[in-house]
Image (cartoon, rainbow, N blue to C red; front, side):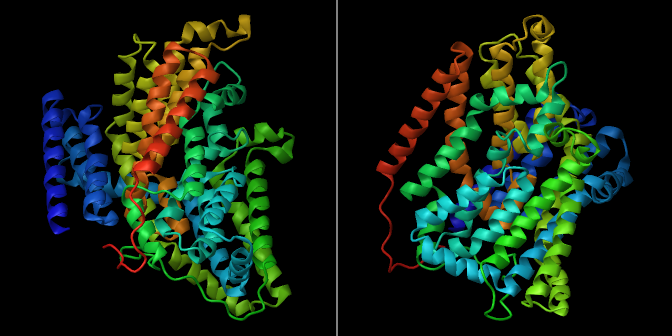
Length: 549
């Protein structure tokens, strides 16, 4: 094992060295802004995280790398490094209203989860689920279905599904890494094909000159990554077939080791204070939370000022809406538990500090991830990638596949799907500006425009799904209370499997602009690959064997 780790470090060092040489050939360090150098910080952070299994130090080294490059490029000197990292990075991100809203929502959800556990609601729900969900497949599908139902926002999806389903999946010996994958694979993929979601609002706002929501709905059938990922989750759940690092984690879970590695960074769930808790003590708080968060989101979009429901979602401030919605839910839940007499006021207040402590790992990772994104923004990574895509616009037949691959790479490196399609969609509309100018006359959007925008969205979600510095990936680890590096390393083979099939599908779409042919062929190819993996997968190890390390 140590030999493999040593070899991995050598390979990573060689990759970084080769990439650095390529950067130097493309442009000097003094011209790092808007050049290939801008992709070095995320490559360093992601590579170190996967090899060393230390996410905090890896993200910080990536941030420092970005700060040093930016200081060189702007001739900021030694003090310029600290100005970039601390001033424009850490302080700016922790004082940003959107980020603070997400942190407030995160902490409040942690408090609510602790209260539900103390009240006995989670224990009662676990006992009910154990009596009604009889198999691992049933537990996996129940997690998937709950994720599909909570489609309004990916942050909300990850944390809520994880909190509710952890006792159920633990009962059926599903590893925390598998739970994190199930959560992650039904968060962004569901949100990006749900017309009423914060993601639909973001996409609609990225397109000018046409009805954004109408265009978004037309991209859904061509969003291959989202649709095929959901199919894969169902297949994996029903067949109970795993491969790659996930297989080791699942084999160990069957023997009672849900974590595989000992680097557990999340505190144990709060224990019930008594045995009076009922299933309603979990269901009702979750319903309150969902209802008030949705209400908070449409409130920020002006719904109560006369704006339509769809328009309110399109214009909502998801961060502020989730913050005020979760705060209102917290107050109602405290009143509910006091009226039910399952918690005292002192126990409710004690849950505040305990809930905050449970979310500290996620807050640290998010802070460093946001700062790393700031470094890539300062180095103009988006502008560099957009220039590369602009140079490929002559290859219109290959453009969907090119856009998909570029979107995957950009979202993986920057950790943001919204930022990725925010950069690429305007490029697509620029490439097809003549066609879009004639929409008002014909009333019909060209198929190639829809396919290319779908490719941008699918690639953005795929890269976001794979990236260790993605907010959604971090939230999935938090919801499952899974070691973050374990989650990333186990889900990468699954995500890459679907991504490979999608690349073929988008290549086909450039030649055959027919949604039924493209989606049908892509689905058939994915199922063929999965059945092939199933037939060649090794039989499960004997139950008496020791867990793999």
